[in-house]
Image (cartoon, rainbow, N blue to C red; front, top):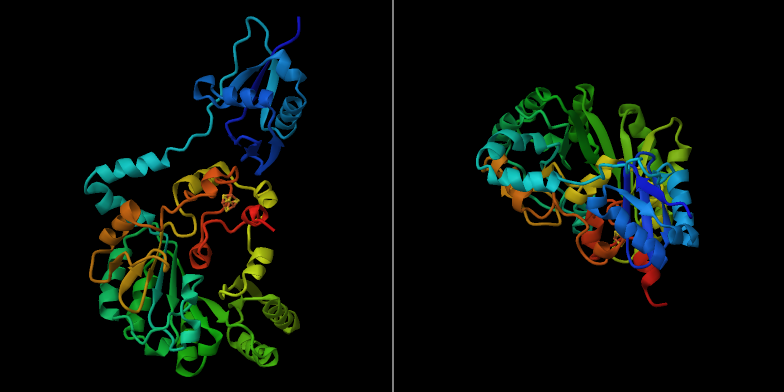
Amino acid sequence: MEKEFWLWLNPETFIWKNSDEVLVFNSGKGNGFLIPLSQVLSSLIERLINPEQMYCSDVRPVEVRDKLTGAFIDKVVKTGSGGICERVEGNPKPVVMFPKLNIQRSVERQSKISGSYRDDKIMLDLFEMTICFNGIGDKKRGGWNRQFIYPPVTNESLVSTILLKQLEAVSGSNGLRSVNLLASDFSGIESIIEIVDSLSRLNSTRTIWCRMADLKEQSAKVISRLCKGSFGLNIIVDPVADSEDSRRSVDDLICDFPEATWRFIISGESDYDMAAGIVEGLGSPVEALFVPLYTGGNLEFFIEHVFIRPADLLESGLTKREVFAHQAVNTFDFGKVSLMPDGRYYANLNHPPIGTLDESLKEVLHRELFSGKSWRRIRDEKPCTECLYRWLCPSPSGYELVIGRPDLCLIGEMMKPV
Ligand code: SF4
């Protein structure tokens, strides 16, 4: 008589299949594999993922003889994603608790508990706050703040007296890990001393964001004082029009701001080459990041350098918690709000405001959590809904909204007719 087996998956292992392939991802090890499906393998996997089977299925002799099924079992065992043992009478079937998300349900449940979530817990969901005091007049750079932190085009300024009241509300928040202060002119911020004072009572990282072009005169003096008072500094360098000028500016500023992080905006390979050249040519090492800018005419650059490569997702190193997070919330936007010079709050600057400075911040956050468009924006549009990589893929970012397509990946590109 031919032997039969039990095949099981570990509680850390996720498995997704479509009509052609099966993807197994071991979140304990942070990697996975993809295998084409045969009819025989497909029916084994159907049984394996049936909740009543508790992540364990019998393997029948016909399945053992199937080449693809054999390769699948071999991979499951070799990658530590599960195990196999002989099915012997008297030995009980292994039982595994398969990974199942219930965060979503808990958010829905909380929304029904009127009052208590709104009043007590909502502030714990606020992780990061960006306060933008004033903006720039250069319309050519309008809308860049929909892609990354950057001053908006506006001549409005935030009314700091109302802001101070809001900061009092935030001061009781244990969740707030990070506060960003953004402006084109820091010397023009009224009540800056009181604001800084108020922020110093928070147990959060505090960071100044400004453009290199704005680091001059009185504004630079204010920033320098704040940096001495334990603020971090992010300096945004616009596309490097003249690399020699930029190199000199960076060189000069490094002496005054040695701890700064430099964020070079790049929209093409020549920007990258120039920015990388500046960084390499500096007398001392700096922390430098390259931030892609979509201009409307550089999709090829994005396809080449920014788009997701499915093969990379199989080696993404994601934990079980991170895979679940992708299923419930937008991991770029969740817990973050931006307060703009017009006194409006945004959860994502590509979406309408979620409230104003005149309202209670708790009300604003509550609105976003339960009926907003950003914090819970997951991959729930085609083609992502039909993609095996859906929950391994990073949450949709602002770039998807700016470019106007839900999938910034090479899968979409490969499917296009040549
Ligand atoms: S189709 Fe969507 S889910 Fe799939 S890899 Fe592309 S972006 Fe990610």
